Amino acid sequence: MEDLVIQGRFILNGKVVTGYIGICDGKIERFSKAPLRGEDIIKLKHHEILLPGMVDVHVHLRDFSQKGKETVESGTKAALHGGITTVFDMPNTDPPIMDRETFRRRAELFRRKSYADYALGFLIAGNCREAREVEADFYKSFMGASTGGIYSRNFEEDYSCANRRLSVHAEDYKLIQEFPERPAIVEEMAIKRALHAAKSLKKPLHICHVSTAGGLRSILDTAPPWVSFEVTPHHLFLTEKDYRGNRFLRVYPPLRSREDVDFLWRNLDRIPVIASDHAPHTLEDKENGAAGIPGLETELALLLDAHNRGLIGLWEIVEKTSLNPAEIFGVRNKGFGIGKDADLIVVNLKEEWVVKPEDFYTKAKWSPWEGRKLKGKVRMTLLRGKVVMEEDEIVGKPEGVRINAQKG
Image 1: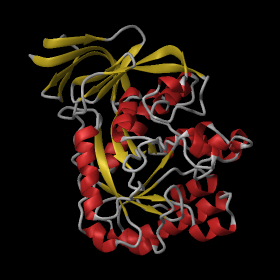
Image 2: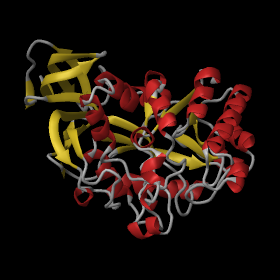
Image 3: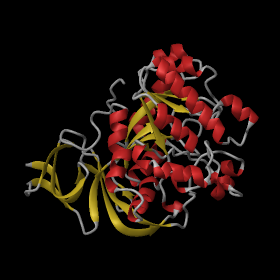
Image 4: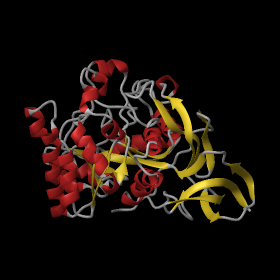
């Protein structure tokens, strides 16, 4: 007898099936068309479907001296609320995670405060010796200044220091000085440089928030197989026209032209990962020009709404937000299969709701989509077989654990 049985529709290997999922000791034990016996049973309702929890590989959770923007507690609650069960914590914090002691402090903070499972990042910018002293779950490098202002002055050297996959913010620091509004060439030239380094070093690389047609074209045409990349919802659903006159939509890299956005959509089948780049700021910070958009609690909802409009398949969403991120970053216990962690979300595909940031768990009580009606909503989130969010309410205490990432 299973600890928990979930009965209803779920998506498996690209197909929507109706049946039962048996869960024991926090793991998926079996899929069955025949009824299963369990100590507890969750029966899905009409229009509800079970999906694997999301693995968001690009999340800024602030904390440390920036608790007013976000904390590990508020941010991981927001993640569960949005259907995200694993977050990758970006290390450009204040202070930045660039030495063994700060990394240790970050690990202890997550151990005590995280409601979601998590991966810990380490920032590399001229600190190779320190980078080799820690075993981070992933590494991060900025080719040009972004939030925090720290960037890599010798990207190739810093890239060579990473013990695991390096996530790179690809904007050229010299071109930023020449073109502070960061037009497409700033990203495109940085991506070309990153790809050249990847071919030379033959080390795993992940290119963050690709936003331009030229940048994506370079990746699709020339990237070696050990290079992965992501796009964000805001670069898929907003354009530079939305940004004009609205400082709250300042983000790095910037929102792009309609032609760029259309190119991303035309090549969506070749984009392996969608990640939020959740970047919370206070309203005052945004008024003063801070770059970043909060996204944990709208990422999946926007994709479900796009699915309802025929823009993206449900299996595509599962692949790009859960299965591919787990595989690319070597997180063997995440995904959706026998023996995997029972990180699951129940979504109502037909429920319509209005985005109200005041109801979010993130401390960033604003959103580009405020007042927007979306179709598709997360109703329940399970982490390792335990219900942790139901009907917009976080259930239980912080029990997130650090992922078991493999090298590569």
